[in-house]
Length: 265
Ligand SMILES: O=C(O)CCC(=O)C(=O)O
Image 1: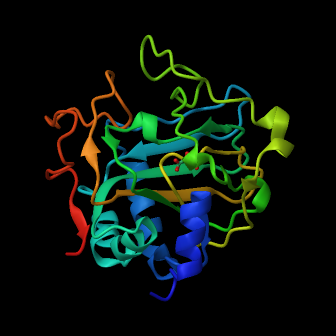
Image 2: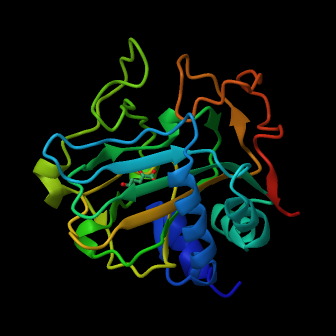
């Protein structure tokens, strides 16, 4: 298993987040080329934010694995499906989507605290996102995850990163004010090297600071994967990603060309 040992699997189950050192180092060049291509030719799903203070933008785009060959190669030819299955304790890995998040040098856009699951048309106990750093990132600018938050059974209200509610008439619980009470939480983050990945559960509360680095970009390729218990859920609104062509009903197995099985192949 090399990168994923029993300790990491246990820590993932207990904390809902682990650091996988150097796990995708040999894929860096390919993923960086893919990100360059994507920024030059974004999809209609691109959702970038430009700060009012004149600092650099935060580029985001989703679900591009089928049109950027470098991303497709990565998800089918790397060991990501195998690693995900091990961490999730699943017999298979289903690719849910890719998400590119680039904070250009000095970008003041903060990623607010949130969980991913309420944005997604999928449910089930087994999930993992690999947040793959394509640049070195200091702990100060790193993704932060709250250990154990995946076990709370609460799904907090999803919002766009500009603070607007994702769904209309959503009465679910707001994310608590974590930043004013940081000592109350076990917040995990690290000094990251390019090629490291933070693996976290879709239910884990997480957020990220602005790009504190004024010289270096903060390029991230995030790969979202679900396990053998995954099923479709209609969250009564346009989720993110929207998956508008998917015609599944709540409770259906997550099957279809949008959601390829990447392990076993
Ligand atoms: O990279 C970021 O700023 C946020 C990442 C994130 O929210 C995610 O990968 O789900």
